[in-house]
Length: 226
Image 1 (cartoon, rainbow, N blue to C red):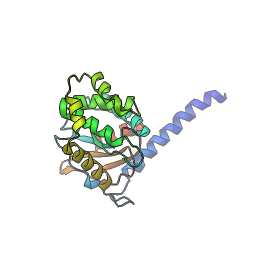
Image 2: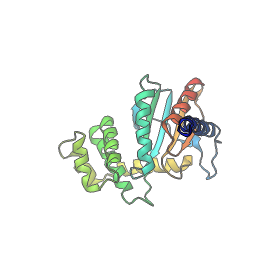
Image 3: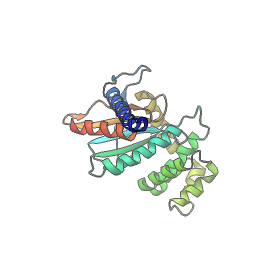
Image 4: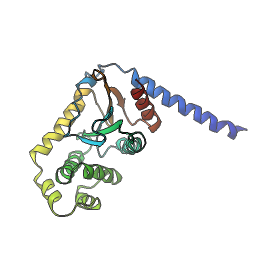
């Protein structure tokens, strides 16, 4: 009897947790306690790393750190979201760098390696490399070349890019990090759900942390419904 009631109770409690997360997210104020403002999120453009339809009605902009364990789990969640919710072109995922250099010594190196892959091989390669970096967490910078080769990069272009560490790439990473701070991020992952309405983009919905798949799915469904 005890076992028969345990599973239904777990399902009910899980539903309450998901519903609570959605409710809290939808009610978050525009101004956050730390002075951040979600409306300051930089507009999504062709220069962003986008997985899915660039013209999607719903854009999930994530600020992430490759050495963050919670980011690794959320990365898997977002891959699931795009595989299920992004197939009709209504949902897309934007990845922006938020290296937590204060606590992760290789955070900037990881971000720079990912940006080098994007520069030399394009958007699809960037996303494959993010998967590889998270799978290897914490990735040793000495293995970047091996990881790049594992996703099909050949030749010396990646190694040359990383070795020269252009100021342009570092400026991009720094700009992403600053925008994360401007919108109110104090840790990773920190995400904003941007919804396109008849009068333009609405006030973003904040996801502060590694939300579970069901919670993200419900927020997306609510956004599309409205």
